[in-house]
Length: 294
Image: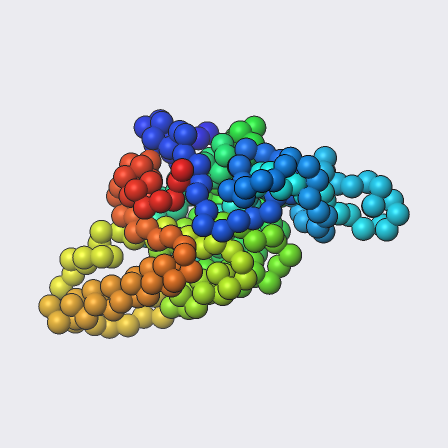
């Protein structure tokens, strides 16, 4: 059910949003995303190799019969944007009330619905579990399929496995067509800024929604504590005094600014989302004003 991850208010707030991109992506099929190019027609433009999830209606069967190679006919009048949703399921996301994991699922569903409504090809790429990529989803008819897929991965809970930076590297080294890659994560992977740079250098347009709790941004701790690293399973003992907390806040702020700076350099987008907020209100208030949508 859609309401298991997004309430009715959020669904109303995102209605009518469509992704805005700063890069041009040649389409595999004619859809709803008009090209910004001038003086072009709706005629056949070129061929490209078939990729998983492409619409088989645009497969050139004559070429396939002659060369035994599947190729797709492309057009110049409209763009077929591929949207990759990298939703973090790593153990650090299983924190807060509601958990960052569930909030990431809500944000992923909201972004996916926007893509489907805009005629884009939406790919769900859970970060953490080692699982085969799901086929691309297209059109409003895929809404329930996307919702059920996200429900399954979120209800499965946090898992170990790949980190966000590792998942990004797998994406850029795969045969996936470049498109809009949205990372939904707490962003606590120290290698993530470098991975975002790699994403941009390979033709993807990177975007990130960083999900943190208010307790992570401003921890209310004191005394002698033993903290457990949810990712590595290691423990560290600290004395939570003003100096320790100030150093923590400074380190977190510098890390977050490194993420944002990397995305700005790549003409990407960044948003910091508090897990206690309403996803729809955040998209309408912060991301829409930040130029994410048209």
